Amino acid sequence: MSMRVGFGYDSHRLVEGRPLMLGGIDVPHHLGSLGHSDADVLLHALCDALLGALALGDIGSHFPDTDPAYKGADSRKLLAAVVKLINDKGWNVGNVDCTVVLERPKLRPHIDGMRTVIAELLGVALDAVSVKATTNEKMGFAGREEGVCAYAVALLERE
Ligand code: MG
Image (cartoon, rainbow, N blue to C red; front, side):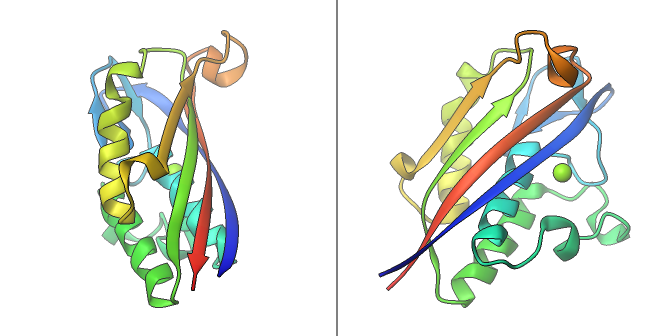
């Protein structure tokens, strides 16, 4: 069996009047992420981890934010397209591990919902999807609630 590992990172500004989409879940909050698509940092970091594992570039090269086709895009569809790309090359997802950095609100009530969405999109069991959340102890852009960011690693496998 061959294995590949990939890493992804993404960040978006937090503003009023936008939904806070994280892992395909609309998290109730007075601030949401600003972006061309639905600005789901967690799914974007995951896309980059999967693409990175096969050195296939990044999410921006596959879904340019200058392309009107991706305005308001549902990031679940972007992730599904990335999964299809890696599956077509003969690779499957082994497991993924992600961390979201967000000062507020607490994400614990939404974590299992995010894991369920992601597991379905990746075609893996729920226990192959880890989503963790942390505050940034009020430090930096995440700590000042100017933005939200996410990190992800993914293991890909091929027989
Ligand atoms: Mg993004």
